[in-house]
Amino acid sequence: MDKSIISSEFLFKAVRSSGAGGQNVNKVSSKVVLTFDLINSKGLTEEEKTVLQTKIATKLTQEGILILTSEEDRSQLKNKEKVIKKCFKLLENALVVPKERKETKIPRAVKEKRLNAKKVMSVLKQNRKKPNY
Image (cartoon, rainbow, N blue to C red; front, side, top):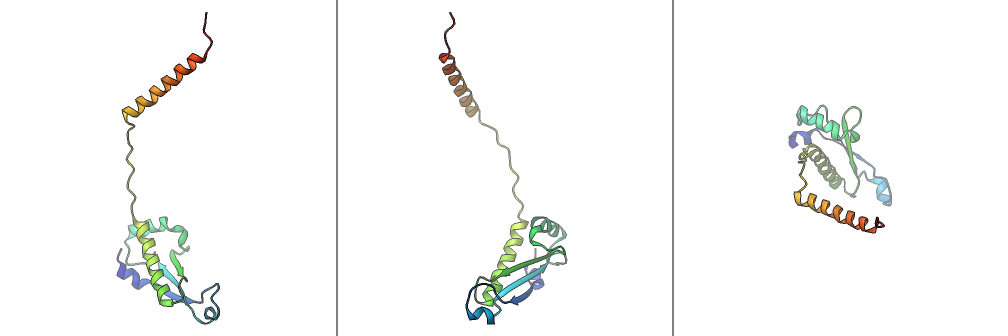
């Protein structure tokens, strides 16, 4: 994954932010929408593209375009920086390969402890029965 190539492929659009904020909301376009064409990206290898398409499929459009937004801040520049960080974090987390789980053996001492507890319980229950004459 080549971040410099990927960052040059980002398309930004500034939109009016929703929600409360007074008169500033009606005048300033502080919300930033980032669009990234995952399928036609030159900064990703084919293997990375297939992994990303499966892992972040819910965040992609049918054409394979990733759309992220940021409207946390009142500043358009800060929102742009935040959405870029969010995008790279999303891509990096999706490309991380999880470690394979190694099956562990149950220790012999644990098995013996369980069997001894069963024997003790069995003896207790046997002692509750009526004696046979």
